[in-house]
Length: 84
Image (cartoon, rainbow, N blue to C red; front, side, top):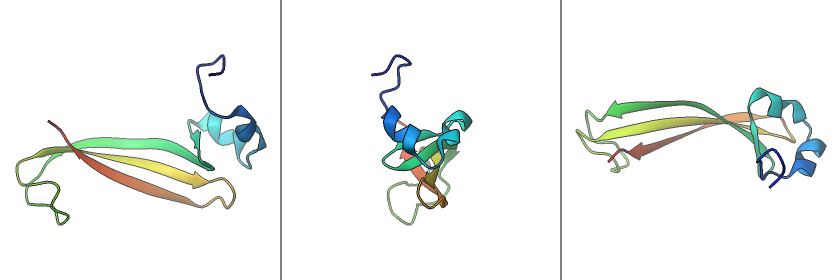
């Protein structure tokens, strides 16, 4: 770990095409920049198509934004997890 408590590869960040993203709250992960966007809690009203969440279950939906360091393309990744 570095002095700041970050175990990321400082050399890779310094050599990246978009090092300013670190100042904007993004973290370096496998050649991509990642940032947490939002999290929300929901109660399921009908069964989800994938069958993982059923009626009445409470679940949390999270969203992360990824930015490719080489190309600059970005995408959102959504995830859901049942709260117990």
